[in-house]
Length: 231
Image (cartoon, rainbow, N blue to C red; front, side):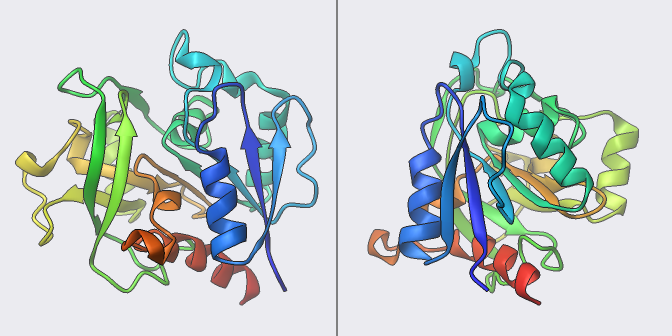
């Protein structure tokens, strides 16, 4: 079985080709672009909501894209157990669509952040992390509104249910406040829903898959997804 990744394209997406290249050209899976106006997932096994600035991030990041025709199909797909990964702007869209809890605020610094981040893999028993062998991975970030926030009760549930998959950290795994690059509550960089089939993460694993870049730490995310499908 060669799983098929459906990469949704919105006006303003700028990481759709990165996700397509990573999954198809580097890792060798099937991949197809899905135009946001077409409510057809075209037989995809995995849906990728890529990074970028859907609809120019007007109003609020992800707030307009959430109403694109394809999102209704993505929500139905996810509610039936289909695997969905939202990266950066895709994470913001998942929050707006209600597939994940919480919201995004402007970075604490009020500045756009574009650099490598270090992520502690908090839960390796998920469909998105089971094939990650390292405890800390290096994954680039590029966002202005990546400051994850949720209420206290929801936060307790996320932690208690092991839904926090990635947390901002130092290169050696220290999750002290000084290593929180954007102010996210509890250093959260990526979470799943309770069912474990939807992941949202602000860092960009699709940008660190090709070994030619001397960093393929992101490959484990996609390999984990595929393993969960073929097993």
